Image (cartoon, rainbow, N blue to C red; front, side, top):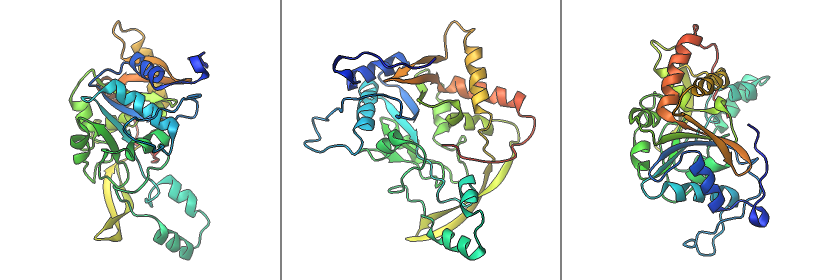
Length: 303
């Protein structure tokens, strides 16, 4: 499906029209939604002004309006979760290896010394998009404490979801993805807005559910006692290189079902999908078991 611009009264999407888009994707009052979003193709948006914010203007009016629309649908019992990953403080990411290519040992040491330590209260997410940043910075947001793969959340379940994120578990059962999967609720959804399955972080949970998944060492810099400190930990080797194929297989399997797992539509002018999270993760675990006979050879946190 290719999204096309729609005729709209006044020529722009509004909080109300965007809210209707979210409802068509399966979002309901009280839902919990894990959102990956790129707002680049959303089209013209009429900024929504929060009547309780006075004269204050949001830093990103488009992201703020999309956020307001989604929270309007979710209501006070709903919860919104976004990835707020940070690869810029890691010495084991592809981005780091590319950055230091050709450097001398002295230059590498200088670059490492300049890398920002992770601070859950202030470190911006990297490559997660404007919407994720709008959620992270929103009043009342909670953020999990993993120095590489944190999540930010707003709403009824936000504090509980962010409270426990094991430092040795990027995206597994001891991350916020674990309870989202374990609740087995049809109201717990993944929203992919303007992005494809290749960025679906919940698919990584399926990598942990495989028997004896391959592991590797990771290293990053955090702030402890007011000072930067490098830490190393071992975790499952993450590989998203086949997630696009996994998503294609998931949608193909879904076409034969009378009760669909995937709702396709648009948010504004951009393509979007709503997936039932526990179905998507269960399918991914089965698919990976049959289509990944060998351990992953490389790791990359894709944006």
